[in-house]
Image (cartoon, rainbow, N blue to C red; front, side, top):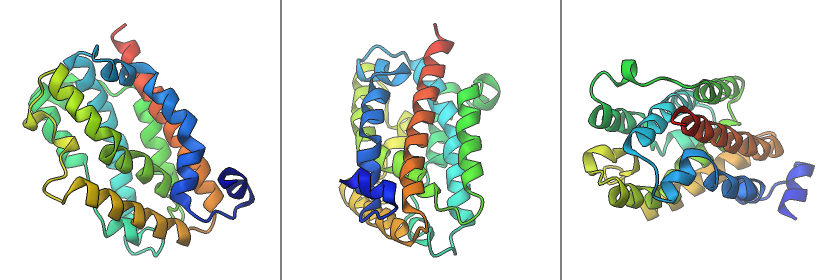
Amino acid sequence: MVVEAAERGAVDSVVTALYVRTRQLHLEAEKSGILADILHGTAGRDSYTLLLRNLHPAYRALEAGIERHRDNPILAPLAAHPLARTPAIESDLVALAGAEWTERLPVLPAAEAYAERITEVSEGDGSLLIAHAYTRYLGDLNGGQIVRRLLEKTMRLGPDELAHYDFSAIGDPATLKTDYRNALERAGTAAPDKAAVVEEGAVAFTCNIALSMDVQRHFA
């Protein structure tokens, strides 16, 4: 019913509709590329480092887009709950690959396409950024915490290498998850085309799957 409503443009809960629309893609993502290797405990430190390096452009584009629209009533709720991960990712990359990580680690084609898509949807009212914020930030606050524990166990990564998943300077992850979900709901309510936001969620997951597979292929 939620999907049918989304197709009609009458979405009651954008977050619920995003969840329903991307559920199968989420399962596919967990079985694809480097993410599957991480979840199975078979990924190496170098491959995780390359994944992080290639997520960096997407986060940078997303956070620039939200900042650009901070006075826009649609995205103001998201700007009021900053979960910016770009500085944390940069800190992790310095710890994992050294201060010259930008020169040492390549940006893969799928990462370029992902960041370009986010930059593209930052134009206009920016409402499609809601889908990318949902995918990235709620992902970090949910499954990302499982990934953090796996990385601690399988790669013996320490706090200095896992700042990406550490929200302690902002607040309790469970509280942040609830607060940010509510912010996404308020943003979704203000979006003029809720069905388009829901469909952009599928685009975001497709970009993530392509990136995960691109990183895995790099080490094949």
